[in-house]
Image (cartoon, rainbow, N blue to C red):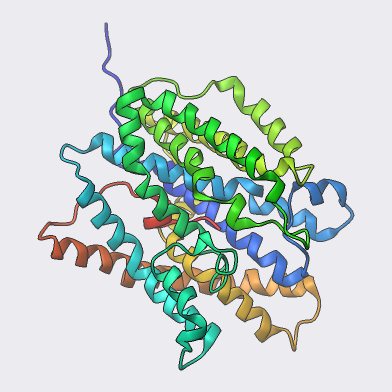
Length: 386
């Protein structure tokens, strides 16, 4: 007797859960530096200096998988919506993305500009920086890359990846998505090799605006779209045996500052492999919502975009406020996590309800269209990378 294939869930529970894990990893990671005043921790420091106590906090941040996970989820959700849509248009797509992303971003940006520059704003000094942030191309200039909010660079990349979605669909029609994604993988690696001689400035710091250029992350986003298409067609996306070799290569890549530039793409493949297993398990009837901790993480995932927008400058501000009374790193780290992070979660919930939801309603009202639920990008609806 033949049985019909299981229907797709209305909402993928694992997506919000993974968003929640990723954004908590981002927040925990951004608590380490202001508390311990150490350079950003990676696997290289974790393995080469295991005696440093703060390095043992690094696993709590989910290592360098958290940002690639957001890009993979973003590509998956956008393409899944396209696959399920009966009437998709580029105009409606960009309209919905704008009202999902921009109102909350604009409010946060104005607040952090005023926090940084004070009032009145000297436009002659800050005008180009502000304009680049308003138009979301600040990631193209090293001076502006992390100026008002160190987490905003990924939002600019996300918007630029939305613009690249139309070329991605055109390439899909011409060559198929599998060959297109393989081509983007080759493009990213060739570009990294070409840019490698200019990766570090005279002070030995990474030129992030160069090594985190949007084209280098096109594959990381597109692998999520490829996963969506394979799930939709009920075909395997990645070889199950490939996960652990990818993890090994990812660990080895982080042991050198030169090979570390390849760990982002390896982490994207790892994230896609883990996502595929969770999606197939959920499609077969598995339910993460059975466990309270999973429901809580999913709730964090729902507000993760707002949490991403607000957390980093407010953590830095909290450190300055606590500094006269808390001078040791471990008490500072505990204060940030026990006092400030819960307040940030409350702020994220308020921002989600008052800015994100309101923005979507305004967009639908202006378009004379009733609100319709579709799975959204984590960097636009429910999460972000940092």
